[in-house]
Amino acid sequence: MAIMRGEIQQQWKFLKSKLRYRSIAAFSTLPNIQAWLTTLVILLLFTAIALSIGFYSHFLKFEFLPNSPVKIITIVTGCLFIPAILEELTFRVLLLPHLTENPTTSQQFLWGFASVVAFILYHPLEGLTVYPPGRQTSLNPVFLLLVGLLGITCNIIYYQSGSIWPSVFIHWVIVVMWLLFLGGYAQLTP
Image (tube, rainbow, N blue to C red; front, side):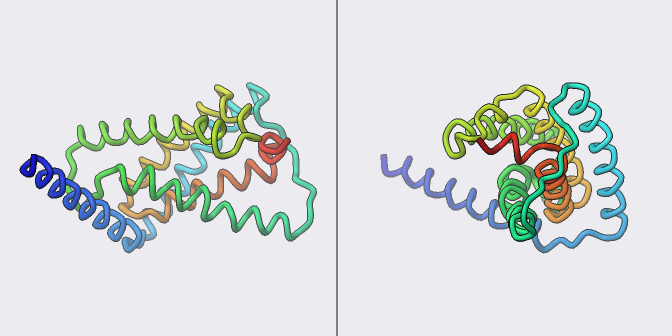
């Protein structure tokens, strides 16, 4: 029993060390100009696909959130931390091997797949538990498809750059645009 406990403690130490390493590497790696250009191209590609799916399915609609400037600033700044930084830390940085770990293509694919599945499952669980007003939206198949596409997009850009910042940027821009201009705020509030 003591041997098993010691092995578990060693594995826990190893896991904490790996997650700490990944976090430091992801936050301290600053993307170069090539990474930012790739980020913009991927963001435009995601936008074209997401808008096509969203408007075709009537999940998205042009709807500017007419509200006070304070409310808009609160949404814009709040979305930077939750969901952008927090979710990218959780579903990209902690789950995906950092480029400096020299992952194989199959490791990147397997962990990327697990990351996207976890990212998709997280959203309905959030709507069912933490944020019940968003329950209907979080269970919408089109929403979940778009969440999956966002997860894939952020995985690609994270693997390409080795930095959390491009995926945070993409996640933040997409959520803010959805909330402020594409009916997202109305879908998440009663």
